[in-house]
Amino acid sequence: MDSFLQIWGGAGYLLAKIFLSHAEGIRNDRKWRVAGWFIYILGLPAWVILLGGRQNWIAAANEAGGAPSLILGLVLAWKGQPRARPAVDLAVRIFTYLMILAGLVYSFYSFGGLTTISQVLEIGVTIGFLLGSFFLARRNPAGWLLYALMVLSMGTLMFIQGKVILIVQQAVSLVFVVIGFVRGKFRCK
Image (cartoon, rainbow, N blue to C red; front, side, top):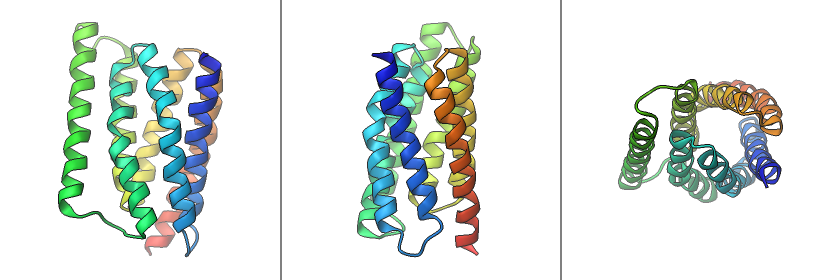
């Protein structure tokens, strides 16, 4: 089951990064962005199960908390809009922050504080994923830099936990994160 979840979650997130980074370099990017955000959502449950199963509470809450940002990215891409209405944007941010807080509190409670390197890496994953998704949903290339933090943190966490499939997936993902950032910077000029 673990290998299946690694392949499901890893493939979903890798394909999403490939599609979203490709969208940065083209003018008619709607179908690539829609596909990227949709595949991200499909890969999400596998990551929540994998992380929760290893008591990575911060990262599991992070993934679950990122769902509204991913859905917002999909809706904005589908409608061809660069930004959401302020009330929707605020609701997504509030939910995201509440999930981060819930994951931190539960992890600190479970482990008696910030006591493991895994927790530190999970915080890196959380910052990178939630803020990166938030910025990318709004077509801000800074989101790619935050995704780099997420990929490096998650890759290290997966190395510690011996999840070879996800280590490789994170390494390949980093390539597309860099490509997305470079294309995004050129798009903004």
